[in-house]
Every structure is written in structure tokens, then in C-alpha cells.
Image (cartoon, helix red, strand yellow):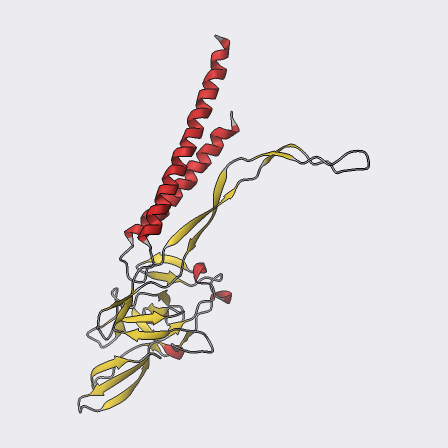
Length: 273
């Protein structure tokens, strides 16, 4: 069979995957804290028809003759550029201005929480700071889930994560609670698990270590927290639609390779008539 037939098939598969990724990016264009992905390709091992010969004193060298065998996926990268800020004026809405992720999880996940950039938090009836799925927001320096004291009637969140409250006497007090931020060395190494959540991996931080620290720490490089704002998706519709056109044309071109290869095979079959 013709090698071009299989090369065309590999190209169609690759561009179909690219379209799948683009479709997911566009579907999440308004998802809070969403990070878009991109597809990278690489060529498949080439078949050597004739090898290399070195030059000597009598004649020059000859280059190898190789025929490529198609394309495969090199990587599907998550692009962790910052999304636009959306002002909500809700005190429990938080945006990380810089590097870092919020740590959320159940009470059993204090040592291994999930990570997220979606800061649409609320206070539940037991005065816990939770996300939309009811997962607890973890405090800095291993403090565990954030719980507001019973005498706090209102509060604000500082840029370093400190929760400053007003008690039932009207006095401003320090609650002792601090929203934590996790610094990730290689954010693209995080594993998406749905629900705007990421799972730590050994390729994101050394040995998959999670240390919930303070926001705005110059030593760790964590970003500050902006209360009353949310981070929007970083998907650029203009770029996604452009990539969609490129993927569509690439898919069509590879389908044309298959059609042409089929016509050549038909001519070979017709030689016997």
C-alpha cells in the first residue's frame, strides 16, 4: 500500500484532535479561571531508502534518502497565561494577581488538596469558606480549612490573604485566618480533573509537593489576592477561530491525500484490464 495513504490518515487524526481541543477552549470561553490548551505536532520516524555515505579523497558524501511516515501528537499543553479581571464587588470573590493557585478540598485532603484559579467562594452555614462545590478553602502555612469565628459579623480579605473581621461590638479584629496560595513551578504539569480543579503531579512540583503559603510572598513569588474580582478564562476567541480555520484546512488537505492515493491505487488495479 502507498505510504501517503497512512500519512494522510495520521494527519486527519492529528487535526481532529486539534479541533477537539479548540472546541473545548471555545466551550469554556466564559468559565471562571479556565486555562486554554494548545496542540503541538511532531513527525513520525522516517523510512530510510538509502543511507549516508561519507566523503573521501576521491568523491563527495551522499545524503540519506528518507520518506516520512506521517505525523503524531507531540504535546497538548495547558497555557497558564493570566485571564482578564472581572469586578464583582463580592468580598468572598478572589483573584490571584500573579502566580499561584488556591488550595481546596475536603477535611480529609488537608495534606493533598486540589488546586484552582477559580476564586468564586462563599461562606456556608457552618461559617466555612468554600467553593461552588462545597470544598473547603485551605489556609496558609498548614492552617487547614478556613472557618470564621462566631463573633464576626462582617469581614474583608487583604492582599496577603489575611481575613480582617468586624465583631458584634463593631470593633475591627484580626481573625487569625489567612487564605493560602500554592506556588507551582511548572503549572503545565498539573492534571486537569474537571470542576475548575487541578491535581498536583511530580512534573509540576518536585515529588508532587504542595505547600500552602501566604499570598504576595516575594520569597516564593506568589501573587497577591484581589478581593471583589474573579479571573476570567484566558481563551482568545480570535486566535481560536483562526486556529480552527487552519485545522479545518489541514484536515481537508490530508483527506485529499487519501483521495489521491486511492485514485493511484485504482489505476494500479486497472492495469490488468
